[in-house]
Length: 205
Image (cartoon, rainbow, N blue to C red; front, side, top):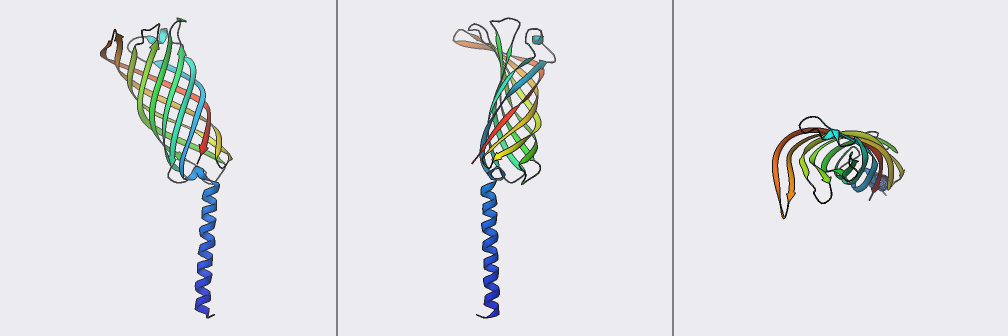
């Protein structure tokens, strides 16, 4: 075998080993690329800053559940879609309040390749505050900007646990009250905030 052929063979063999190694790394770390899903459970706090003084009847502290689906483009950047609900009691035991939202987030992860992955995120979405009151269920709708941060720890290549805090700045602009078979809607100008801290669980495919 000539030296040139040996050189070509060595280069081909080296590239093959590198390709197999990269694929093995990708298989061991599905968090770095592709589809993933998860959920978050924890506590929440809400307040309104102007307009109708609903804070006088809504208790500040409640609970939160969020379902999430995401796509990791690389080791550091991903997009996530969250559907969440925060529940609060009021001074009237017959009335509960639910703040529901749907948000799209950009997520930036630090420490690529590590089991411990801190992250920050920011996004936009829609928010709805709904009162459940003996069949009369008025709701307040609006938009929100959200941001937060936390960390995930890879227990296995396909499962992680972590902690995350998310803060929402909300602009409520419409009040809708059901009336018979229809509803009455009026424009409002109400600002509010909501924060949530909870455990997160991720599943990677």
